[in-house]
Every structure is written in structure tokens, then in C-alpha cells.
Image (tube, rainbow, N blue to C red):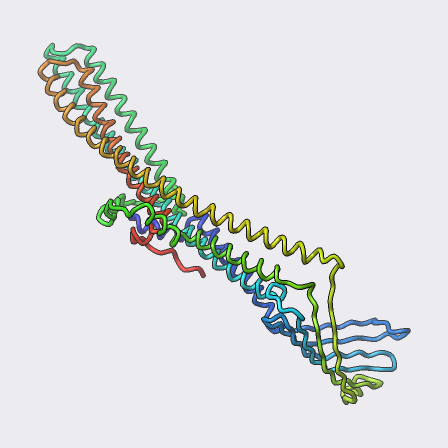
Length: 442
């Protein structure tokens, strides 16, 4: 399994990412419920033991209704009542319209909000895919570092073994003391323990990687730890301002925050323009039939037209006033959150660039240290063979070389991870690395 295979596996198996996808599915359901408000509804009811004076009977109702985008409502239905000695049937068509058009009261704004929330949930899933991709790469690199660390420690162990053999040979020829042999053997024991520690760290990192991919830690997986060196982009980076603008244009959470702010502004403008409480006007036309039984009422013998007015509010208009204040407060909060997020992202970009600069300097320093360690160990080995230094100095130079190699590898990984972090927060991770896309939401 290579890195791209690991990312694809994580998209299918990572626990946290699957939870995010479930939230998208829930937002689909919420959106469907919001849309159902403007679909045709079937209404039916049956009531018995309805008392009119001293009469007991039944009432029936069946109708179709539909709410329109402007808040008006159309309903057509059949209504029937039957009592001991009379019956009434009515075929009615009714149209109800608010006196003041209001998208917030009509449900249009709620529908727009549900659509926006659904889009936001989908963007969150895309953000989750970006972050999951970064986490897989980070964990992959850490496991790669641990694997290379094992190789470094094994090479060091092999060198200490050869050194023990060389010291024992000199001891046999009376060119070294028993103390030198003990020091060499103790150094070899420490090197063996370092190998075990490195192998344990590798196993831990591999378990973390498997868990991140949604695999069982006991599964045997052959990981191909390559660093995409052939695909990794050049070290050239745009200016800070360009990277900041790139992040503002591409970071999905910023886009979602901006849309949330715009929705709050739209709602505030709608509510603050209201001139009063909701007032509904209605008109209906009905064909009415009366008789001794329901069969008699089917012969329509009358036509009726009716008007209606519906309003409900307190005299102080407290609900309307507080709704307006609340809408203004929500917009101010959304605007404040958006500005804070923009400032945070800009700060993240600046910090990431500084981190890359520091990582580059540490990497170059580690490379120079490793090169000097190689030369120092070679020189120390020659001087030891010539009897110019004791075994302790030789062992120190050998340990310094092993540490320098490990530090150089760590510095290399830290530099790659610093670049990865900049790619992530600037919104160019997947495009720049040409990584696989997340699977489509079903």
C-alpha cells in the first residue's frame, strides 16, 4: 500500500470522517423536510360524537393544500357533517394571502437556510477530507521516520558489533585493556536496546496509521513508505499576501462562514423592514348542499363566497421588536466571526511560513552535522587503529554519528510536514500534491 492507496482507504474507513458524512446525510433529510412545506399536502379528518345543541353526529373533511413561495396558500376540499335530522356538504376552494409579503414568515428563508446548511455540511465534509488527507500524510511520514530510525539503529548496532570484535582482537594482542572491551560491549548492549526501542516506536506508529485508515491494528499491511519525492513541488513559494489571498479564496470554512454572514444580513434586512404583525387575508368560494342525509347534500343547492382576516399580536409589538433586535445581533455576531476567522487564517499563513524557514535552517544544519559526524568517526577510527585515542573517544564519535543521522532524518521530515501544513491552510493541499479526491456523498 502506497500513500495514495492509504488516503483512499482512509476515505472509506476512517471513523471520524464517516461521522462527518453521516451529518451530510442528515442535512439532506432536513432539506427535504424544508422543501416539503411547499409541496401539495393531503389533509383528512373524521370526528364522531360532535355535539351541536343536543344532536350527536359525525364530521368529515378531506382536502388538498399547497403553500406558495410568496406565502399565500391554496386549498380545495370536501367537508361534510351529518347529525340526527340534517346533513351538510360543502365543496370549497380557498385562497389565503399575507397582507405583507415576508420571505422569513412564508418559509422561503427557512428553505434557503436549509439549502445553505446542506451546502455547508458538504463543505465541512470536504474540509474533513482535506484534514484527513493531511493527517494520513503526517502519520505516514512519522511511520516512515520510525522505519528509517530502525535502519539507523541497526546500522549503529552492526558498527558496534564490529567495534567489539576489533577491540577484542587488540586485547588479544595486548593492544587494548579489559576495560576497553567492557566499554565496547556495554556500548553494543546500549545499541541493541536502542534497536528494540526504535522497533517498538515503529510498531506504535504503524498501529496509529492503521487506526487512522479504519483498519484493524492486527491486520498485516505492507506499507510502501515513499515520500512522493518525485511529485513534491518545488521549494519556491508565493509572497505572503498571495498565499493569504489564496487561502481566503479556497478555504472552504471561510466560504461557509461568509455565506452564513450573508444569510444573517439578508434575514436582518427582511425583519427590520417589517411594518407590523403578520396579517392574513383569505377568500373562499363554496358549493353547499343541505338535506336530511349525506346523499341529499350531493345535490348542490347554494353558492357562498366568504372573506377572512387573521391577525394575532400584543399591543406593544414585543415579539416583532425583539425579533428585529435579535436579527441585528445575529448579523453582528456573524460579521465578527467572519472577520476573526480571516485574521486567524492570515496569522496561520504567516506562522506557517516562519515555521518553514526555521525547518529549512534546521535541516541544513542537521545535514552539515551528519557530514561532519561521518568525517569525525572515520578520523576517530583511524586514530584509534593507530593507538592515538582510547576506545571511549571512538565510542563517543560513533554515538554522535548515529544521533546526527537520526537528527538529519527528523529534520527532513519536519521540513516536509511544515510544507504540508502550509499547503493545507492555504487551501491548495489536494491540487498541489495531486492527491485522490474524496468519494462522492451518497
